[in-house]
Length: 313
Length: 294
Image (cartoon, rainbow over all chains, first blue to last red; front, side, top):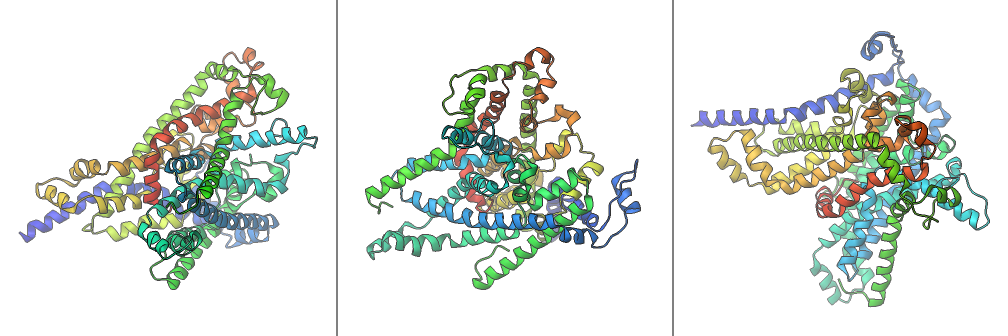
């Protein structure tokens, strides 16, 4: 009997192993194999004509230690890139939390559930459109010759603006575009969490004579706290990562506004695809990943320290 | 929560309507432009009230159907194959790690969670995909790299753990069902809601994907351009389409360039616009189940 059970368990385990095999292979090939590519960050890659990449990398590309990193740190353009990345991400961190939470609380007070649903539907729609499509939306407003903004400027007797050549305006444009695309998803999520709050909490608060703002302060916000915190921790782990589509595609990769649109991800892409600087690109990726991991762990640790119930890991 | 005054409700309602309208305004704008005549665009720029409506852009779209149509079909092909593959990879792994008696469960969990926070970076992925797997200019490059997602595996695992009764699996096992049969005949039929939800998210992701085409499909392989990438390519000129046009010489001169671009935006957006409201309840479930994915 015992023997039968054991062999059954063994069979079950090998069955599970077999079932998981395709996904396992996918992970090894598309996630773990590239992790060895970190070596590239410590090499000066020299392509050997007629030979494959692996041969070139290990036979002909000299090991340069931390030279690639040194170059990145000494490059003034890189400083700007990191500054952009951090500035945008911190701004997004604040807006992506405050705006959807505030809107969700407002909408939760609507009498008409139908209206609330309709607004959520409209708000979430941009999330399901691609950045290529969004870049056209932007173009209809910003195009120098035909865009709506310049039409309005000209009709009101002002000079047209060359938006895609004017770096000063892009922080605002990018923040609005990002918010437009992202707020609805978060709004729907927070709405769902608010709806799930026990109604009796509010009922007893009303009996106690609490007003709307007291209820928001003492019931709604504390109930949303855990999810807000989890999102903050995850976003801290992504503090050096940006949405490539927003910064490359929505800006139409316009060269003259790079000073306010280039982020680390754009740099990584361009170093590889436009300049074939394998080493620099890999080094930038490695920094981005390491810092992200480190911050994630620190933030998670801090959150747990404050409240052992919280944190994600 | 009817604890606010009617006057405040009116105010919030107006604000809500305003926000909703502003959000969908750009979409309406592109629709209007795509139906504007070329002359009125040239004369007045992009406008909410064009001087003259016209179907030129869509007529031209029909005439370049050999290219646009092919890309459209390719996009649909990628979406269907990709979504199916995704669901298979995600659900099998989710089922496996939801089994408490699976000996490698902890190792598998680690294997799935690490890539959520650490990756080899773009260069390494690019090298592996082009040099080792030969995915350059291969339609698989548009399907495989994005096929699996640690996030959805974890979401689905939670669902399996909570929604599929352990006794049912045990009973079937005692009757001699293999793991594969267990998965196909009990787990999959019981997990329709989560499969539909994840499937929809994956389908939208494939439909909207352009990044992999930009990385892995080169210009001389335009037959492998999905619709999103066609749209990307005609950003600067519509040459991509007219160039390949058999009767380019005569047609190009009358190309309704401006409205034509917007018409492509419209035909990419319409499937989303149609599918989205129908599927909204699943999407919301997905957002709830996921909670975290931004």
